[in-house]
Length: 401
Image (spheres, rainbow, N blue to C red):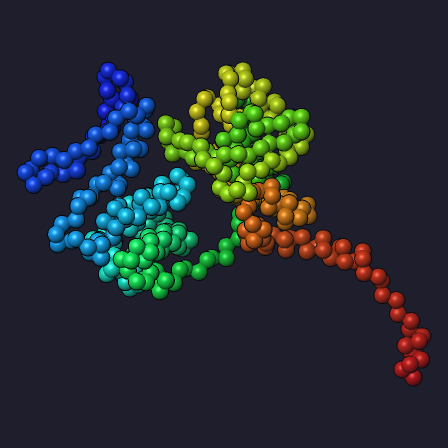
C-alpha cells in the first residue's frame, strides 16, 4: 500500500492515525495535532484533509488582525465558512465545492473579505473565461471553461459572500452586482433508436467484456438511468417477477480505491420503474453470465470493482465511430431515452417520474424542444377530430347574385 504523507498505522493496534503540523509556537517548538482510531488509511486521510482545511491556519488571530472584519478571504473560508457549509449540503456537493475553492478561487485568497468588490469579481471572471480546460490536449485544440461552469463557480462564490453578510463581516454581497453569463440555448445531443441499435450491432457478444459493456449501454438507453444510479444497483433492486428496478442510491466514483454511495440526486430520484419483458430477459442472461465468474452484489460489476464512467464513455465513442454514427457523451444515452419516449408520445409527467426529475419544469426546460418533433402527431389528431368542411356552393352563388 502506497505511503501517504502525514498518515500512519499503529503497529500494535493496526489502526490508522494522522499527525498534522501547524507551524511553530513563539519558542520555535513544532505545533502538531494527532488523531487516532481510524479503520483505514483512506478514512484517516479524509479526516486529515478535513482537519487541515479548518485548522491549517492559525486559530488565534494576531493582535493586528483581531477583528472579523480583518479576515482575508482564505481565512474566512477556512475558519468560518467551511464548517457551516459542510453541515448544509451532501458530501458530494461539499467535495465538489472544495475542488472549486482550491483550484479556482486563489485570486481572492489574500484579499480581505470586506475589500472584495464587484470589479474584482468581474476581473476574476475575465481570467476564468480565458482559462484552458484540463482536457485541452495541445495548443491547436485549446478549449476554455464553459459559460455554465463559470456560472457554477460564481454561484459558489455568491454562497460564500452571502455567508459573510450573515455573519456581519460585510453589508452587501458584491456578487449581486455581477452578471452571470446567459445560458447557451444549446440542444441536448441524443441518438435515434436506429442509431443506437446500429452502434450496439458493432459490439459482438463474443466475450464477457463485450456482454458487460453492452448491457450497461442498453440499460442506460432503455431506462434513462444516470450512470451512478446504474452502478449502485444491486440484484436485490431488480424484481424479475414484476419486471421493475428500484433506484435508491448512487455511486460516487473517484478512483478504484476511493468511492462511496450517496443518496440520489433529489427526493424524486428515489423511484421504481418498469423495464419490460425483453430488457428483463437480457438482465437474466447477464446475471447468469456474471455468476460464472463469481458472486456479485452489484449488477454492473464484472471483476468485483466498479468501472469508471469515463471508460464506458470512451468505449461508446469508439463503437459509434466504428458504426459510422456521430459519437455522443455517455450521459446523452439518458437524453436518447427521453427522445425515444417523446417520439412515442409519452406524456411529460410520466417522463419526469421515470427520470427522477425534481419538477416538471426541469423536464420541459431540458427536453421541451424535442416535442417539436411530435407536431406531426398533433396535426394528425387535429385532422381526425375537426369535421371536414362542407360548402354549399349553390347557396353561396345565390347570395352573391
